[in-house]
Image (cartoon, rainbow, N blue to C red; front, side, top):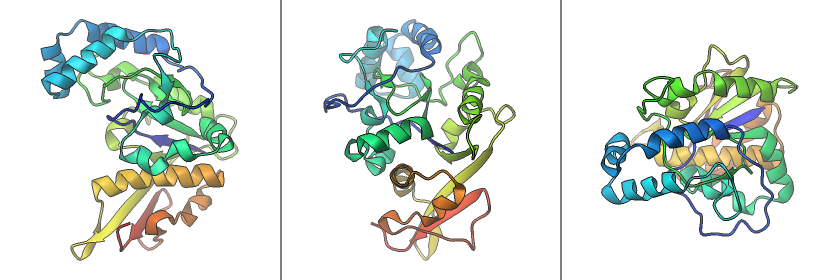
Length: 258
C-alpha cells in the first residue's frame, strides 16, 4: 500500500534534521523546467498567480532564484521534516524512529506542484507552488496538464511489485486530481474524518487535515500493508464507522474533539 499526502504551505528550515538520512527527488528535470517558467515572472505576477501578499511574493521570487538542480544539506531538507502544516503536525515525523522513517520512505508519497511526488526523505528546497495553480507551460495552461500521466505512471511503478497494490488517499482533492485516474491501475481507498458538531457529523477542515497526518502516523508505526489494518485507527478519539462507510470510502468519526 502507498499512502498519499498533500504538501503544506508552511515550511520549517530552521530546525536541524539531526542526522536523518536523505534521498534525492526523482523529478528534478521537471522541477527545473517549472522553476525556469517561474523565474520569468515579476513579483507582481507571482502575487497574482498564487494570490499572495507582496511579502510572500517577494519571498518566493527569491526562492525561485536561489533554487538549484544540485541539492545539498545547505539548501535542502528532508520533505517530511520541512513541511509544517496541520497534516504534518498530526504526522509529527520528527518523533518517528529511524525504522519508522525507513518504512515510510517506501510506503508514503507527498504530492507536490513543483516536485511531482516526494518520498519522505527526499531532499527538498523551499518553494510555494500549489497544484491548482494556472501556470502556463509548454504542456498546457496548468500544472495538471504539465504533470499529465507522469505521477500516475510513477505510482503504478511503485506498486507494481506490491502484494497489496492499493493507494490510500490522504491528500486533498486539489492534489489528488494530479493523479491521472485513467492511467492509474490500482485500487484507491479514501479516508474521511468527521467530527460531531451542531447536532451532526461533518468534515471540519482543520481537524480533517490533522487526522490525515494522524492516519499516516498510525500506518507507519503499525506497518499497515492491508486495507483491513486501517479500520483499527483510533488516535485522538476517532473510530471507524462501518454504517456510513463503503469498501473504498472509509469514514472515521468522533464526538469529542481532541
